[in-house]
Image (tube, rainbow, N blue to C red):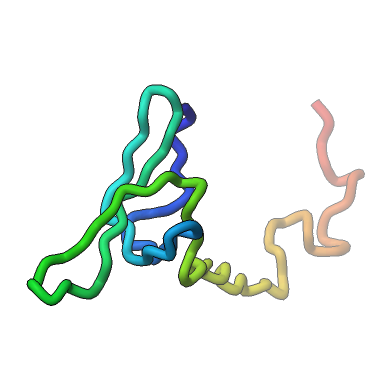
Length: 98
C-alpha cells in the first residue's frame, strides 16, 4: 500500500475486459493493497438512470491520455548580474585578504 493512484478523478477510462467506459468518480484502496475505481458512464439508460461499476486498477486504460502541461519558457538575461561578472572591474588582487 503506497497510497498512489494511477488514475485521477474525472479521467476517462475503459475496462479492457468488458469494454465498460466512463469517468472515474471514486477510488478505493483496500488493506490488502487492491485498488479499485468507481467508473460512471456519461449516458443514461432508457429509464434515465446513470450506470456505474467498480473496476480493478489493472483492468483500466485511459480513453484519452491526460494532457501534460508544457513547462513555461524562461527568459534568458543577457547579463547575469553581480559585481564579479563584469570583466575587468574586479580582480583577485583587489580583494583584501583577512
